[in-house]
Every structure is written in structure tokens, then in C-alpha cells.
Length: 309
Image (cartoon, rainbow, N blue to C red; front, side):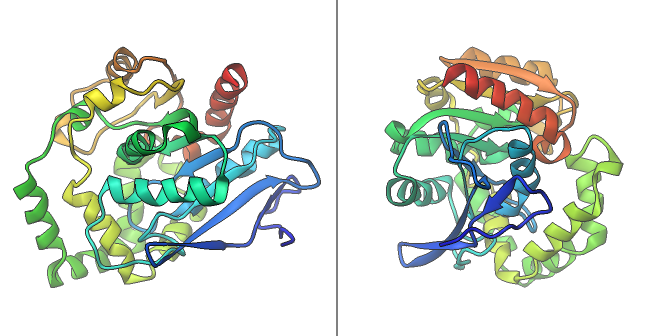
């Protein structure tokens, strides 16, 4: 299959959307590489965040910058079930579900060790993936990982189920219709995600609007909001033997009350104290570093990958 250009840069090609079947669901992905250059180095596996309109498209700016700086690693960029071009069944998704999807993807499509680059609160998916398929994960990059309190305190199951049932209702459907409006998306992005209001640009908003067009995309978002990912991951983080880089925004924040008092330095210190082979740094930006501070983020993780591998 011949790759086709999908961006305005001459350095990057991506395969057209490709698909594989996992548990009878159709799952989408794309492979990025430099045009006319043989890939070199360990591949990257990207895990996109979950939210209104979010999918693998979150990583497009990162992929362009990665190759514009001369990196040659192949990039595998999948849509998680419930997002993007993957099927969107009406189910309550857990980190284990998505990790099993990615485990199958690694085993059948990638078939070689990767560096996992995971955004924000999808960290529990990466942790579960390490537990399931450690041999195919050579290292991890944590982009804006959640507040430490969120990663070490399990929310009650009754609360998770209550929120899910509340959202999985006509009320939730109405809420989602509002949540995918330009007004809400712009307001939420400026209040919770970006350090600079000016960074909430047309590319960002148009991507979210397109990603949220299918109302079935709400099930993944509601699963996230219900907190099915809220567990105590302390022992699992401490068991990660792969080299791990945590990249924190200078103005990183938390939506949850549990994490509001935590400083970016304090959050980074918690992760580094727990990770056996952890290293960390801060860069400009807030909570969506691969998009808001793309050049700095690429430089930071390229240095880590080239040093370690």
C-alpha cells in the first residue's frame, strides 16, 4: 500500500487509515514515517487522551514536528475503541479494555518493542499494558501525567457506577450535545488544558468538533468521566522496570479537587520517587504538551530516546 501525504509538510507521510479486528470490533490506526527515508530506531506507540472529540488526531502536530527535526522512528498511532474511526460500542470502557486492545495491536500489527508515549490521564492504560505485555515495551514517556492523588486513591465502585448510570441516560445525551459545541470546547480548553488562551486555535477546535460529530463517541468520554480508571496504581508504577520519562508542564493543573493543591514540582517528585528508572523534566505549557508546546516536547523526548536507545 502506497502512503499518501496527509499534512502540509514534505517530511511526513502517513498510511491511509488501516484497520484490524479485535474482539469483533473494527479498530483504526495509521503509521507515520519520513518520506523516502528508511525508518530507523525504536518505533513509538502513541496513546491519545479521552475527551470530547479526542482521538488519534490529537497527535498530528506532534508527528509533523517529530520528522521536521530529523527523527526517523516509525510512529504507530491507533484510535482507541470508542474514538475516532474505531468502532464505538455502547459499553463502559475500562483501562484494562483499552490495554487489551493495544496488547493485541502490538502482538499482531507492530510485532516489535516500542516506546509508549501516553497523554495525561490515559496513563492507567499504559500501566495496564506494561503489566500485560512487558516484553514489547522498551520504555515509556508520560506526557502531563495526572495528579499523584488521582493515581493513588481508588474511587468507590458505587460512585463510578452511579456517575456512569447518570451519564448513560437522556440527561447524558443532552449534556454531550452541549459539550460538543464550539462554545463549550473553547471554554473548557482555556480553563483546563492550555496555559495560553491564544493556543486554543482553529486547528484544535475543528479537530474536536469533527471527532465529536458521532454521538456514539460519548460512551468513551462518559467511561472516563465515571472514573473507571481511578484506582491505586502505586505498586504497579513501582514495578515498571523500563526507563520512563515524565514530562510536566510548568503550569500543570488538575481538574480534580484531590490534585488542586499539588504543584508541578511536587507531582514530578512523586512520580520520580516511585518509578525505578524514572527521570523527569518540566517544559512550557500546561496539560496538553504535545499540542501546546510541540517543539519543546519533541526535543525533550527525542533526547531521552536517543540517550536510552
